[in-house]
Figure 1 (tube, rainbow, N blue to C red):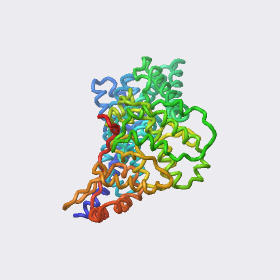
Figure 2: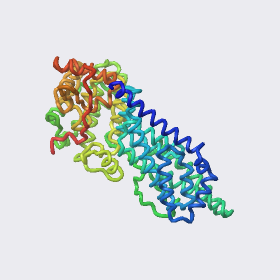
Figure 3: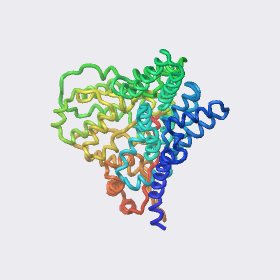
Figure 4: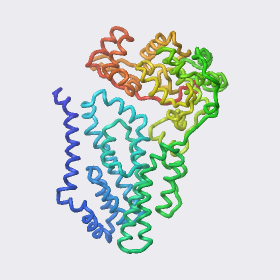
Length: 514
């Protein structure tokens, strides 16, 4: 019986593969195959054109076809030719979203466990990226018409991206492409029916817009999100002849935020700071697990002066400080920059559309740092001679130092995060300070809970799932935590039969005020 249970995820994964293969075969070799060619679609259009049931039939067929991994581009073009731009876009959007979500749920229910079984801890990095950045990444891919639609549907279901993020990214991301394809099909139909200069012009415009749409994610990455947003918004009135109702941030790509102190020229390099200035600030604002951000605002000059000293520190000087010196420097840099960012936006207010919609779908509180535009990706903090983002400090500088204890020391201003220490990290004491941070973590039931009995389990902070690979996977997490636990708990967590589960992460601001 146990062997059957262990093999069930792989059986379900095989069933998912059969569904996809069956969909492909139906579209290519079954009696229905001719209807998925241009000629067959043309015949179907002629049959449905005069029928009042055409919209319902179209939406139903498109939904089922997408859920079974049928190629959808031909159906999208059929919608434009059958219903025109406006109604074709509406019906296709409804059907494509229904089908895409069914395909996602099919992959999630049948294939996710099997992929986890096959990949093991190697999947943790992808899962963490999908949970943290899945919406933005999927949105960018959805905006590129040449990226296979069905592959994204089923592939997303195999990752850890939350369904709400997937559904919203799909809803927003496929709309421009649907409009362009529908317009293209309508233009082709007009061109075949009337050999006029206007018809030819419509075909050329449609083709140009299709190429332009594919470039939007590139423009957003290399130029600016605002430029890409304006470009995307401009597509809608161009195609439909109507005024856009999407608003100034229709792409969901946030605008950049900059801070004057991060742009100012700084004096020449100096010695590596001893971080006493940060300790002086922390001792006044850290209250147990919480931070007094209102008090922090009154200490902004002191905090800014400390960050400025980090900016004047040169990279060669840091190299000479040794591994301990670099660890302390960059941990403090992350924490100081996060404190400054929250202080500049405090009290944090609910973001405007569309970020507010993204946060609502992801279940983020109204005072979460996620309400701040580009909170983790904006290069707003001038450290060691360059403007840096929080993600850069964490993922490109600290994590390559191969010190998993950093995840108990850097604080993302959330209640779910391991608490901020009331003192800065220093080169001479960083090892002892990191050990103390781990002990605080293991002693706090908010981050680690042990349940005994016939079905023992250990509930851990989600951070250890997101960054599990830094510990060597789940077995590495067990080995890492064991020395920091009492002997009885140590043997329990090391027992492979003990279930490891992860607690929901609370993104509520870690403010002393309710």
